[in-house]
Amino acid sequence: MTTSTRVQPVNEVNDPVYRDTIALNAPQKSLIVGGISVAALLTVYLLATQHIAQTVLLGIGLLLGYTLFHARFGFTSAFRRFMSVGNGQAMRSHMLMLAVAVTLFAPILAYGYSFFGTEVSGYVSPVGVSLVVGAFIFGIGMQLGGGCASGTLYAIGGGRSVMFITLLFFIIGTTIGAYHLPFWTEDLPAFEPVSLATSTGLGYGGAWLVSIALFGLVAWITLIIEKKKRAPKMAPLPTTTGWQRIFRGSWPLFAAAIALAVLNALTLLTRGTPWGITSAFALWGSKIAEFFGVDVASWGYWEGANAAMLESSIFADSTTVLNFGVILGAFLASAAGGLFKFTKITMGNFWASIVGGLLMGYGARLAFGCNIGAYFGGIASFSLHGYIWGILALAGTFFALYLRPLFGLSVPKSNDSVC
Image 1 (cartoon, rainbow, N blue to C red):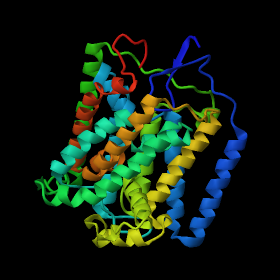
Image 2 (cartoon, rainbow, N blue to C red; image 1 turned 90 degrees about the horizontal axis):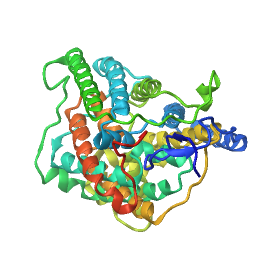
Image 3 (cartoon, helix red, strand yellow; image 1 turned 180 degrees about the horizontal axis):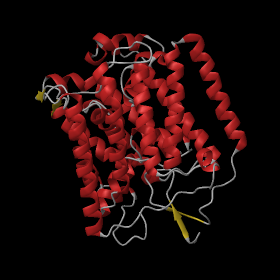
């Protein structure tokens, strides 16, 4: 179909798609009612069986999913646009998100305050071979799988059929990674975790200043590169106007960046650790493996503090509850915009999703997290490993630009009208 308008797709794997108009479709009211009903039932169940914090986290997850979808706030597409044609619009939104996050995280981590008296700690992880390899292959995987960890969840909420395949193999990959993790972390070289705040003598105030300066530097570099390469602009999102835009979309990237940072800080205050995604995938995969007779409990990954998670209900796992909330929130956002639709699966994106999901899952375990837990949560926690994760994931993205065409996936070009 030939039309005059190109807009951003729901799935991060695609280029902008053609539409007759930039206006949203009518709300899918039956789907909205169904989504609210599922959220309400899950809320009642959590209130009856779990600590109140789990219900709060479900609400935060719903808002995270709603925000991600309404702004199509991506990490995969942001990295790909920047590495292929130099468009840094989304990368600058990342820097804004991180700036707000460190501003909120600094006093929380410094004073150890939480809503429910939980001990507070950021994501500060070692820097070694495991991180380097894991982040690099995650960068490749997210460009083949059609989305990062958060992108996979919100695309599922939007009905992108191929993302169910990505999620399945994401779970398989992270489960294998959990099995292999002791080799990567204990047998291969690594430095101790480095916090800009507590390992350097800067304190949280000094680390905050350094972080803000780094974010400003990255934003400035993206502007220079964008101007030099004359990068095409990002395509617009389908949207509405007035107050309805709050509920039906779309949201500007800067608004989503601020919202995601605030919601991550609320997550830290609620459960004592930042937002994460992929540890739940390892839990789900390990429980399934255990059901089929695999002695998962003997794995080094599930020894010590993690052992209790394996023995408990998945609804006792805060990351699982957040993930369910993100999917439901994205589903409600897509239905509100009239955009929920199951899509066709081609042979190319089928195989790309398998390879991409496996690489993301395995890489996330090796790198102590994904784009959310390692990149967003790590940098917000003033951890050096978060910065290194971002650099290596960008390198993996650049490598993947040469792999995507093998699966029939496109790569933005400098002469495109939009990207």
